[in-house]
Length: 172
Image: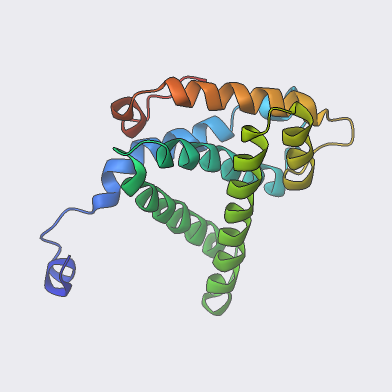
């Protein structure tokens, strides 16, 4: 996209095609069952953890699909834009937003690696251990329960067509 096109707004934003999927990622991460039954802390940290975990699962699904792989960066840009807005709304100043976004991206990258490894490992305990390290859980939480629920979501994502993914039609 050229500078003049962006400046004059004569071209559509390519991220808009991914907005339904981004909204579905957020909706899935806000499902009460993650917090009530699966033991995720219902706090700002816990909710961010679920957004980043669900997003990581979606990004892993997209990277396995040649039709969606290129769009994964656009979905990540929507994540960054949303987090930028959330940080500013919560009072983080302009000078610190970039530093916070960098940390959030690092967290997302870590979650991608942990889930890629945990989901690929036949040992169910590997994913539960990754969950314990990467998700803010209540003291009474069972990481194995959350790991099983995330495996089920990963299977659901794998069965979702590319077209339905882009449209945000992901069952839970």
